[in-house]
Amino acid sequence: MWALFMIKNAKKQRPVNLDLSTIRFPVTAIASILHRVSGVITFVAVGILLWLLGQSLSSPEGFLVAHAIMSGLLAKFILWGILTALAYHVVVGIRHMLMDTGLLDETLIAGKRSAMISFVLTFVLSLLAGVLVW
Image (cartoon, rainbow, N blue to C red; front, side, top):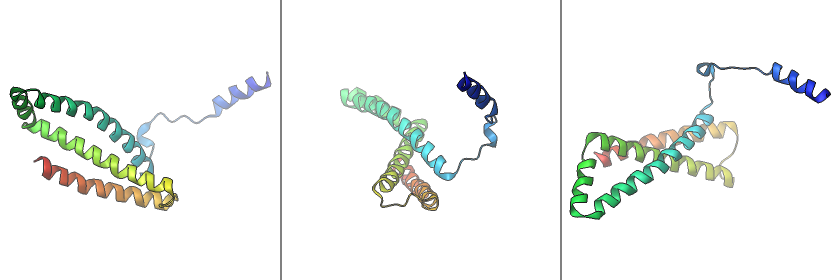
């Protein structure tokens, strides 16, 4: 009985902040969230790219269809986004592996620094992907 009373009081004392615009995430949290998002984008993109590959290898007409799809501006922009998401996922994945093996310190300062370096590397790789696509 006493436990139920404590649970009811604990629920009433919790702070509730439903205004998401007031929450400020640290750069390490943003890097982690974007790593998950880029993983989902990469997972979905694999299906699309495999379909496109199958279309291009099915017949000469299928290749022309795939070529027509990929020659559009929207398709190039989507491909650039996929390559950027993949680059980010790989860069931050390597960052996580370095932290897991102990080669990179797991302090707040090292985490912030490595997250910022990951963003810069991804930006450079994104520019290179844009040159490759266009």
